[in-house]
Amino acid sequence: MEEFINSDKGRVTIYSIEGCPQCRQAKAILAGLGVPVCDVDLNEHPKLQAPVKKLTGRIAVPQIFFNNLFIGGNEKLQKMAPEELQKLVKMVKEEPLTADALPLPERKPSQGAAMDTDCGEKLIVCEKDGLADLVAELKDANLIGTQRMGLSLYKKSFSKDQLLAWLQNDKGMDQGQALGVGQGLLLKKYMVIARDRGESDSRFGAASRDTLYRLMEDDPHSALNAGQTASCIPVEAAEISLRLRELILKLFSEHLSADGKSVDYKGMSANPVFRHYSELAIQLQRVKLHSLSREETLAFFINIYNALVIHGYLRMGTPTNKWQRYRFFNYVSYLIGGEVFTLQDIENGVLRGNRKGLAQLRRPFSKTDPRLQVALKDVEPLIHFALNCGAKSCPPIKTYTPQDIDCQLRTAAEAFLENDDACVVDSGKKEVRLSQIFKWYKVDFGGTDEKLLNWVLKHMSDSPKKTSLKGVLSAGKTKVSFLPYDWSSNSSH
Image (cartoon, rainbow, N blue to C red; front, side, top):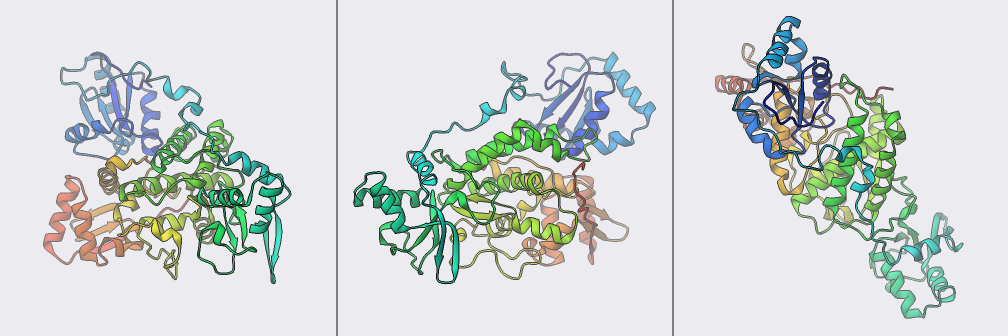
């Protein structure tokens, strides 16, 4: 299937995004028709979204054209009668494209081979941090072990005095140099306080002699990116999250079944791209978070959430019941900027402005939790159409950038609401049936049925469905119900 075809011959054009199950299903049918197929990824070429929407009135993908004739999306293609499909194929074979050809990206000389090269070239260049070698020596110094404080045991830890003694006796530092290195290890998130006597001061020199520390990589919460030293100088959070999402999307696309209905997670875990991904995820340990803007926070944590779900599936398997799902979303975590963030922490703590999630009795972050400094000040309802939990009813995976995050999220919401699995308007019964997402997080959409429906109307693209919703709402006494949610995994095993 050609990415771009610059000719006046007939062709099928499909506007899609990488990793989209509906797109994959449509491409499988189109590939067997014996005609040229031009595949345009709207994630890669966002400037084309507006002209394509102007042509079709739709934002959801895929959008399929036979020559310049728009036939709809995957559902329409699946239901098309064989004789009707053959007429379209004949048209493509016999008739050239008209002068008003469809919008296509310009082919670049290097394009086309980019995705075939080793994904390692896409990784962020690692500039080694000055303290990384010292940390490696520290790990081999027989300094780290189990420490006892009262009745408690602290594994893989060491005291302030032990560290200072090693720096002075083994590394030849004077006391001032040793204190400076200890402070550097704290500030650069190579080590964190494992146990102290209640001191809140993060200055190494001010800590009591028996304050216990541990290396960041020895996280006791089993974060998926722990166990190795993040030795690179920290890069911008937005950059690393974007690279992680690119790798995950590549993996997802390569291991999505031809019918788009399942993902081969076992095959994905054996792919060399996953090794590159895991190596890059380690560098999240010391990434800087506290200077992020609202837009950067949204893009960073949405991308990380979607990547972490897939990483969790690869390491732990797919949850199959309510208890396993609860444990998965409260246990699967990354070390990010010196703190542990589970999937629940990211969704409800950061992106929902520290609101209680499903089955949660309290807010994710307490008033003294340092992660609260990263949380958004206000909930952003649009995040619910960007987070993919790995279930079949979840929104599709996309990549988000801080430069245009609000527009990207609005587009994701429009595409989600166009789907009848998410929103159905029954004018005869004066009923609107919505995804369970709107029930679970109703408070984020206003808290009442009236405010919820007005929010949905406001965020729908212009379409017959929107017109129907306006009519139902104007008639009054609209009934709101919620569609079944397909929690089954998209795993092929």
